[in-house]
Each structure stands twice: as structure tokens, then as C-alpha cells.
Length: 248
Image 1 (cartoon, one colour):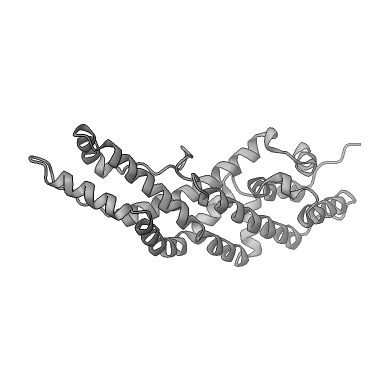
Image 2 (tube, rainbow, N blue to C red; image 1 turned 180 degrees about the vertical axis):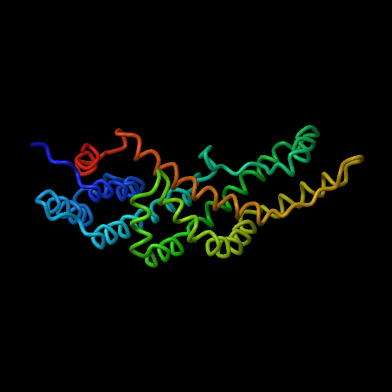
């Protein structure tokens, strides 16, 4: 007689989403993989997984997953080379950018776009302690909500719990990194050149907040994309453990 899979065990599948984000190859043979396999064996014997065990496993998975997601966005090219999260010239400056390109300043406009992405990459590392802190404060109710939620429930949890604290931490770091990559100088030169042109509408723009907001958007988009992928895509299950769990 074929035994039905317990809803709690099915819920455990959700916690593996972020294990894939962290690099599934590294998980094979790890302590976390061993503990989850042990728990699944116990469940198969009829014992079932209690919610506290599931929550503890989810916390550990999200901790490792957060570290890997931050690593993905904070590396060189993490923003610039990723079309999903690349920071483009803001719409508010599109007229300025188009005008400057037309008079031979295209290279400078491109350099400003590169600078925005480099600043976001360098600041992204600052997200890790905030995300880890959010995991540590997760309640049993939070954990169960994530397990039973939709295809981006874990990402939605992070966005809800960390957006304000991340932004407060991001902004001064963004400002520091923007200075380090020469973005302020690039921006001021472009703005100065544009504002001296006849018959143009003078532009002012809050570049600091724009780059900070786009940096956070990129981080959450990365988490959400990976979460959706592993829920829907069998090819993303690259370890025996994932194949066993999701294969059910």
C-alpha cells in the first residue's frame, strides 16, 4: 500500500529552496544535509516532523542561503552583468542622458551606469548581518507561514522583516561606495555639462536614494528568482537529497 506524504514533510520541501541558492554541490555531505536526512528517515518511520524541528532546519537553511545570495550580488559583476538586477540610468535622467549622448558624452554616461552598479555591488555585502539577524528573530509562526506560503514566501518574509533596517544600513554605505568609485564626480560633471546647455530643463536628482533602493530591489529579486526556480524546475535539484525530497 502506497503511503501518502505527510503535509509537514511536503512543507519541508520549501526549506530546500535556499539551499539551492547557496550552491547545492556544497550541501552534499554537510551537517545540515545529514540532519535533514535523519529527520526524513524518522518521518518515514511514522514519527513525523514536529514544527520546532522544521523551524530549526529552516532557520539554518535561510542563514546559509542569505550568505550565498549576498555573495552573488556583492561580487564584481553581480549587478552589472545580471540583466535581472542591473541598475540602469533613472527615468528622471533619461532626457539628460539622451541629450549628452547626442553631443558626444556617451562614454561618460556609460561610466555613470557602471559606477552605480559597482557601488551597489560593494554595498551589498552589508546586507548579510541584517538578514542573518532577521533569521535569528524568526518565530515558529513565521517559519510555518513560510513553509505553507506561496512560491516567494521566504523572499516576502525577508522583504517585510528587513527592508527598513537594510535601507538604513545601505544608504550610508552606498554613499561611501559611490564616492570610492568616483560616481559623485561622474554625476556632477554630467549634470554640470547638461545644465549649461541652452534650452534644456535643469535637472536635479537624488542619486543616493536611487542607488540604495535599486540595490535592495536587486537583492530581493535575486532571492525571489532562485526561490521560484527551485519550486518549479526539477533540473535545479542537483543533489541526491533534493532529488529524493522533491521526487516525492
